[in-house]
Length: 112
Length: 114
Image (cartoon, rainbow over all chains, first blue to last red; front, side, top):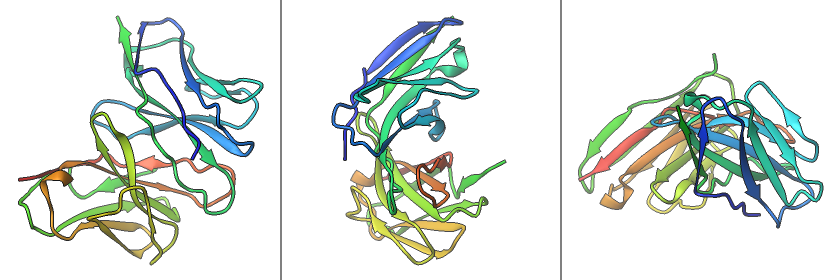
């Protein structure tokens, strides 16, 4: 499985944008990039995913480099509720490719 | 609201006991997963199932078995619990399909084996 590299931790001030980086230099052409987050004492929850183009949803934006070797999750205005561990995950497409391989993630702290 | 429920939030068992962790989803999802989560190691996949009575080993299946007799229910079994199986266990489910499969997670069961 292709691997991802993320910083162990990041800090952000409340109401400021946050850019969470992820490197995936061995990504294959058909791997999807998924982001999940895990709030304290909860199971992970889906944030966003993409393949080649940048993506936006109500929670976040995903910016994917042109060579797809890196991506950035953007939280436009961090709130205290966004304090969580954020996981960047590559998932192969195709039949039978159901698995997500979680790394250690980035622990985001939001400062009031 | 989509829902994945797990039978217990906290469980304490003794070494050598047989332990059943139950997971139920109400979304008619084909795929179900069991992970364990340990500090510093992230989430690791134990087993998954893509259909009733079907199962596939994940990254760390040793010491575990699973059962999927009904579509909505996926059970994780520790035949003889050991202290190194003390962990947070997370169940998830997703729809079958191409492209991407959002996984929905349950709240987790924190298992302590004494």
